Image (cartoon, rainbow, N blue to C red; front, side):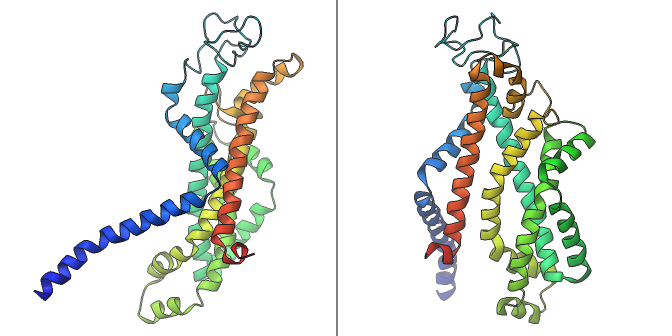
Length: 303
């Protein structure tokens, strides 16, 4: 009977933990700032359902191509609510698909950069020695270079493409994670739970990823939220300069680059629309990142 009770207790434990995690996640979501969260959710939904929301193919001309102005001007059409560009492509459809491209690049680039940076930061901080010296000298050399200039150099070196830009973001941003995480690990490796794990014969890999990694997860989450906005800006900057995702793939940076000749022709929708999208996405990501930083830091939260 005692064995049966233990087994039943073990079986009922996971749902309790799952419910507790769900309750904490729901409470966490309710505490998040509403406006930035809604903006990010809106952009994510637009990116996911882009084929359903876009009325036209973003890479093909809309017939007749002479329809340029939005409906508020004479000659506009409600089939193209924001008008068309000089090649007759629907601006709204390109904005919608541009959200997908910018979000994929920004999120994947930041996630992969975080994975590399957190791993190397933990290795550098815990193992130390030659590993620490080599990794930190690479970090110092990278941080001495402006991100945009280094990104342009890498983009000119590699063949253009979506995955190339993601790789560039990883190379540019992994050092942010590595330096901060290393500082955390230098403190954590002297804590009692790490010393106890070492005394019981646990290997280095087990200690780093089972005991230390969970204790730097909050810091990594904050860094991730603060890096997404910068990654979106860098991608848009590279595309604007012509070394990012190649046309005709719609990105907000490409749309700004293609709209440069219209700055003197008062065709404001071609420049304002993608610029406003970039501003709102970056602003929402930064506001959410600032809130998350305060939320995760007890000292800042109690001020």
